[in-house]
Image (cartoon, rainbow, N blue to C red; front, side):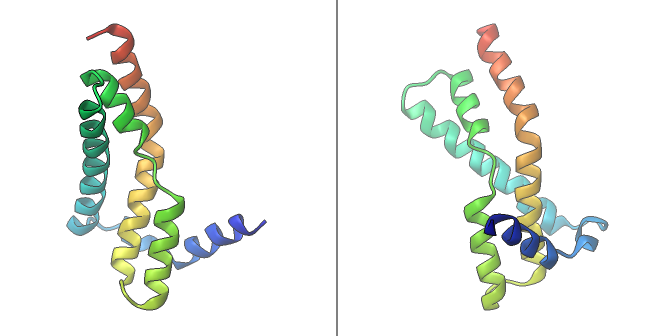
Length: 116
């Protein structure tokens, strides 16, 4: 019951104009967040003995962000630790990571099936 209210509250704090103007900071946060999450998970899977393609599936599968990140960034905004620009950049990262994962994951799984 409270989860939809939380997401509505987070959305209410978002400044949609951030997405309408090109912002190198927002782009850097999104790209860095995606690369670091996939790369770190990939590296961990490789260390654990997975093949390159299997590690890629694990890395991409770990990409989606949502719950914990939204709680932390909302709390940081409320406490005044971060500003609206960083808040919007992190929300963009959450949004992009959730939307691109199915596409990337299906391609990564296809690579494992091909054995390449």
